[in-house]
Image 1 (cartoon, rainbow, N blue to C red):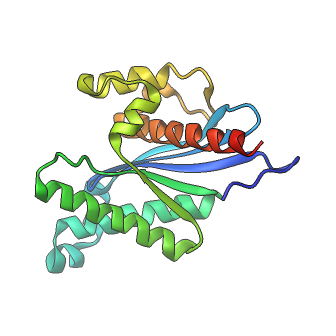
Image 2 (cartoon, one colour):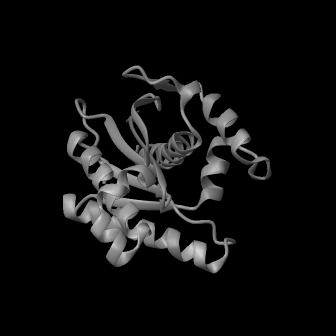
Length: 194
């Protein structure tokens, strides 16, 4: 639910580029009056390196579940540090092979469980990758380069806390694209209410 008042016009978005090994996590503030976005936090969690501390999980359940545990803990740290209004994650491409699609859905379930444990009233929105690319006007057939160029061309997005957009990896770039998708949807809803 979007709350707007004279003093509360910032909508804090936690956007995620979903993955089983890496997860792009971005926190951004959408100004509901101006439509400007300020990226206040951007990180890519690499679960392969960190998951080694869960040796017993690896031995009993497999490496993938140790990675999920690492991703969940990183996500929880971000949720604890930032008071977000909504979480949005990129879903899986439906044209992937069945096993890859299932694993990405499993990773999405880990995100959902982490959010529920944090605050079961916090909304999780899942958006298809094609809608993200359309929102930032990236040509889907041109891959990651087109996405990077499109996101870096967004003039209403600024970066705080020493974040250098040109140094962000593809996962953070995708997560910013996810935030842009939600910003467009949110601003359309706000304008319909007026």
